Image (cartoon, rainbow, N blue to C red):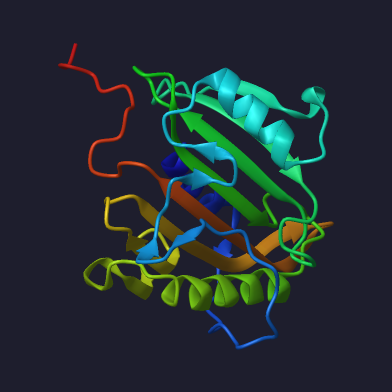
Amino acid sequence: MMRRFLAAASLALTLAGPAMAQTPAVDNPQPEAAPAGVHVDGFRSAKWGMTEAEVKAAILNDFEISADGLTGEVNPTEKTTVLAIVVTDLIPGAGTARVSYILGYTTRKLIEVNIVWGSSVDPQAKPDIVTAAATQLRNLFLTSGYDPGTIATDTRGGDGWLVIFAGQDADKHSTVLRLLQGRMASQNQQQPAAVLFLSYVMDSRNPDVFKPKSGP
């Protein structure tokens, strides 16, 4: 799911490359920190290993949405189940966010949570606010107790995405924050645009997704 979205967003934007600026703090979604360091165990009430029913209950507990506001689909490539919601105030001022909960192909239990802000979700999102949110999240994660040997910041990927932060906790659960900046067509004009992608992953080394055993 994450790889498919990143590829689609890359096609939608023509890359520019302004550096991120320091901005006032905003409220941020984050894993809860344990005394000895961060522990990435899911997102809010939704924890790794929860069943679909348990994840749905956690979503309804965490957000003021109706059951009708929760959509589900199967990823045609990875054959995982994706439960998605739209949240308007996850980060105040950053615009609408889409939160996707990924259930594994074989276990049908929670293995990943992806959160997306910006032009691909909300055409009215302001790129400078989206970029400010990226900066503040990076600064937050850098002080949250991730394993220092796993941390990477501000590295440019070959696909045009800027990895704002990547790190793992002591149990190898991953947090990855990516930013794509550029321009997007709007009413026959090219407007500044930005997409911010935050991913919490239970096991990035061996994800529970469909893997073909052999070629045809």
